[in-house]
Image 1 (tube, helix red, strand yellow):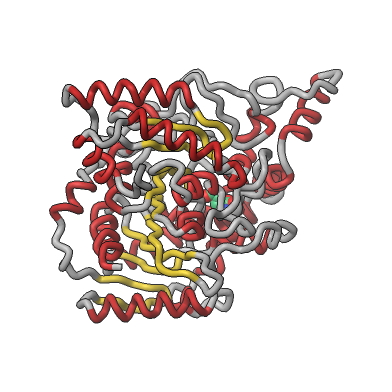
Image 2 (cartoon, rainbow, N blue to C red):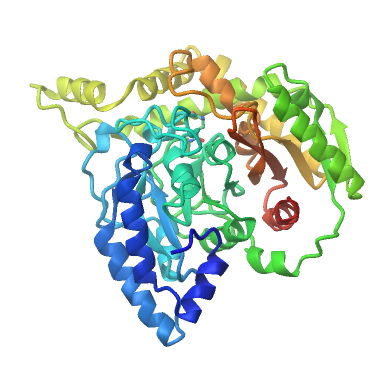
Length: 477
Ligand code: GLN
């Protein structure tokens, strides 16, 4: 069977009768079972995937199949699916089975996607390398000595290695875009409020968004339009209309000229790999010669973004994770003899080191004596960043930057230095702090043959132009 990279190719072969959904699922399950060294899947949902495949094959015969017929998709292990296990890659939720499905899962299934399994990630989505999973590190399929990025590393590798056509991840500060960059695929963080978080295990609720990983912008656009839209189960979802992003790409004028800004400090950043800098600079020149307006802008706030992000997200995480206490939710220590020990032992044994670090940091920045100095201050910084970013969007369609300062690093290389790991997020957190949509598309490879990506950010709810332009860029490459 072909190694499919686009849903349209699968649907063409389904329609011609060359393949069936059942063949496709069986083939992929076989492939996944051989690729265990990557550690991308924590579990495959064989029974439900095969059942779903047979149902869709029948629907295809009587022309009643949905838009995602033939789409075999994996989900990050923090998105719940009724009757299936979900653990947030944490011992705290090991063997927990969900009683309901996330809204995104329901929307995918309603359009006949097949959910093939759950994918490894950093514990509770905290990390940039998928080394923080309680169930082992996920390896980059381009070279298994390297990390895939994180926290949605399993979701990125599953697509990169052709174990499923697409996957869902979640992005709180870059967890879709950074692994997409490191694995040479497309990753999208939609506008905050576009996609329901109902059924997403919360990390930092005012930042988290679910989004897709794919090989093509067209498939990312289609998945985004299907999972987007108001949901009465999540009051932060927006009523703003969801255009058909995928149709809009087909109809769009690929010669349309855009106004694109790039932040000078990003390209001058001293941590930026020279090959990445050259590739982004060359892309800027190419865009200019294609008739786009591309201008450097000054945005002297780069140094504030990562600190503000880590103060706010750890504060939210410390509150969100309070429920896992061995009483209300989660692992209960068998060693506890009273209530206090139940809390202390369950949380000490159930959470990993990075999650504990964040809970402590978050509790500290929220504590009475420090609230104003840290949490309230960071909220003000967030407001300034949002206002200043929106000022840029009143003049420009997109902000362009590298997605990451480099290609993937080696497994173990940064695990002893949390600050260095946090700086992984330098270019990605802006979109989450301000709520804007952003995409990473493949840009090039460093000399060691590892991929890296280009990031485009648009103003809130302007995914349509983001997809149109990204598709033009990718189809040109
Ligand atoms: N790397 C970032 C962090 O560790 C982003 C995580 C995410 O987006 N879930 O917080």
